[in-house]
Image (cartoon, rainbow, N blue to C red; front, side, top):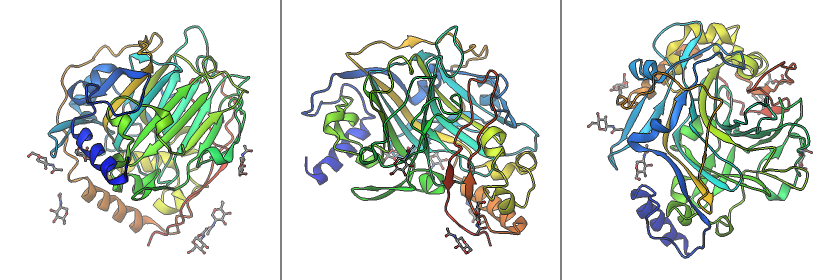
Length: 423
Ligand SMILES: *[C@@H]1O[C@H](CO)[C@@H](O)[C@H](O)[C@H]1NC(C)=O
Ligand SMILES: *[C@@H]1O[C@H](CO)[C@@H](O)[C@H](O)[C@H]1NC(C)=O
Ligand SMILES: *[C@@H]1O[C@H](CO)[C@@H](O)[C@H](O)[C@H]1NC(C)=O
Ligand SMILES: *[C@@H]1O[C@H](CO)[C@@H](O)[C@H](O)[C@H]1NC(C)=O
Ligand SMILES: *[C@@H]1O[C@H](CO)[C@@H](O)[C@H](O)[C@H]1NC(C)=O
Ligand SMILES: *[C@@H]1O[C@H](CO)[C@@H](O)[C@H](O)[C@H]1NC(C)=O
């Protein structure tokens, strides 16, 4: 399809809110929609995890009821379509040693043979934060990372402009470094590296070239451009993760009939090769959105990344406790998460995640229109305190072994960040 008509087709169908009943394109798809988290029912598909953070962050994960009552959870109206985006945020008004946040987990599970499409408008970017959109195996009676592994789709710390896409699995899963097959850079071929803590991680480039410009994969650039659409194509042959600008999403996806063969796009990350069984090392995965603070990644690289120098605050914990306004941009705004399955195979039911006893049916409207001013306040605060330059070279950590983690830090490779200097 010529570029211009594809662009308009995408726009037109996008305005139909990606309904599966939209007219199919000429592609042949064996996939059909099996889960749709969007609009006013977005949160119905999730439960809130309220336990301790397995990565030892300075965070209190709250229930849905608490979140709705304290402005952590709600809807943002898209005035141009009069549709609702889900807002998943953190406290940015009060000083608190453990900052209030949410960790939402889907009630359904998914397996190989699915295409997951996440339309993300905004994601947390702030010193001290460690946000993630990811999938976690929910196999009963087994321990992480052997309980169906982990697939990380959006994950970063502080203000890094590099997204990291990662698989964490039990032993016996290694992937190929076919550098021409994806845009990012593979850190390890062994997805059990560091006993799963490091996993096989692919660092996305800072920007991807698109048909109409560039797409930032993380950081402030990600939010300034209005986010991106993530597409995870998980088959028995591997896991490919794509990022598209919203207006460049392939028309077959927009039409609800995804056909990967027609995309003609290079994924940001591709985990493939015969060294892994992608149907068993990874399985029964719930979808999770969470933001934690400090802990085993953001906290451990506080000094080495230059975040301490940039903020003028010695520890991540102190910064998170005392500077609420710095977290006004630490929120996810998600238009939709949709899962398509080969042959329409039905999702499974999550069994491990303890269900939030305070699940709700309705959520407040949240305004994000004034957030940039809060951010300016945070910038002012930060530059006022800053004494050095934000070198922004984050040295990942090799994490010490964790006896019984189910969510772990990783990235002991070096993530080189942009080198901006605070005035
Ligand atoms: C609002 O909807 C329009 C039309 O579909 C879309 O282009 C735009 O990206 C949406 N904005 C947000 C913030 O969701
Ligand atoms: C959307 O509309 C509401 C209600 O009219 C208004 O308060 C809000 O500022 C608008 N948001 C944007 C981003 O225009
Ligand atoms: C994969 O190949 C790239 C390009 O040659 C290289 O930079 C990277 O270190 C390799 N990764 C691994 C894990 O071998
Ligand atoms: C942001 O701050 C400026 C200057 O203080 C003010 O004029 C403007 O109205 C504010 N914008 C919002 C959306 O609050
Ligand atoms: C930035 O940090 C790296 C790693 O700690 C260090 O090697 C480099 O010299 C630093 N650069 C500046 C300009 O401080
Ligand atoms: C980072 O900034 C410092 C100070 O401006 C400069 O000396 C250094 O070369 C820069 N490093 C990179 C990698 O751009």
